[in-house]
Length: 416
Image (cartoon, rainbow, N blue to C red):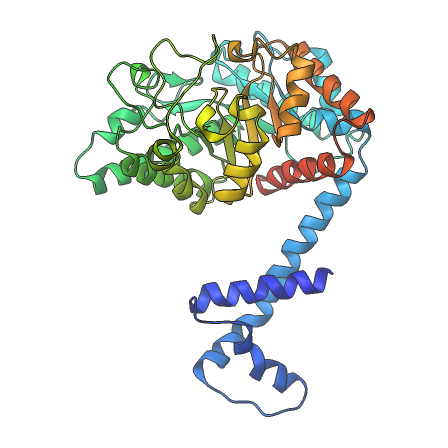
């Protein structure tokens, strides 16, 4: 099975290197030579012979890594599996002992940081080292996978930590010509990555890919949107993502399928929000930046908590399998990690306690649950809801293992 998958990856790699017209039949002279048959030394065959072993090694290595994370996930206890799908947060300048204990025992995927967690560079980096040390504990069965250490560093006034990017997304989007704006977006992504890495962080909940509609609306009031033109948002978001991830900090495209049409009062953190736009409008405008982000390799996508009834679901996007699985993963082909917005959001007030919300999100296809209330108990509640649903058969073990393997794969890729 591993060999067959490796051959498939090698064939894809050959097609990538030599163009869409290349296929696995181009490897025939190489295989003929190995079996003692005739060799036809055409330039293409020669190139493949030179690259083939390296490409095959890379393909097998990728498959081996995928198998390793799958095995790691299957070896976790139900409590550990549940914890590995939760990003925790905490109040103040020091993480509570209870959170450190969870990390030491493999019951947390990562930690989200806010401005209230920052006192000074020395204090903050000391906390990050403490969290990393807890993760490296011998009692943690996934200690080889770095914690997801996360913050919102979008730019402008939406920055949790001192440092880049100084400009807001809107300021970047207003640069002319567009090529100059693209270069600025790339510099912002690289600078944000360098800043976060200097603190020891490895995930940014940015960029925002919402396409705002009017001055002062939900996104524009804080200059969180690059533009009211979908093509501009797509181009600049992709540049930010590519530059950030080239520096080994994972980017997060948000808020799928788009909050650009929300008014200033339609804040999902506070109230339920319905965006009742036609599916064609959502596809042509709000979803438009996501194919470019996916092509740029974005590692995470955050789903909106707004409802989009014209997309065939009455549920908030992050609770809707129709949107998570059918639209984002199915139609758009996203293969990375999905992450919720804050699980405590006011938009979910009709969906029960945190435990129930986490189960609904996981059932819809969300990988990571963001417990963002700066109360580590909230993360514990979410994890307990997931554990109980797994034990009771409301969430499938196979799907649960796959989600955790996906998360571990992301963590493995962020190893410094």
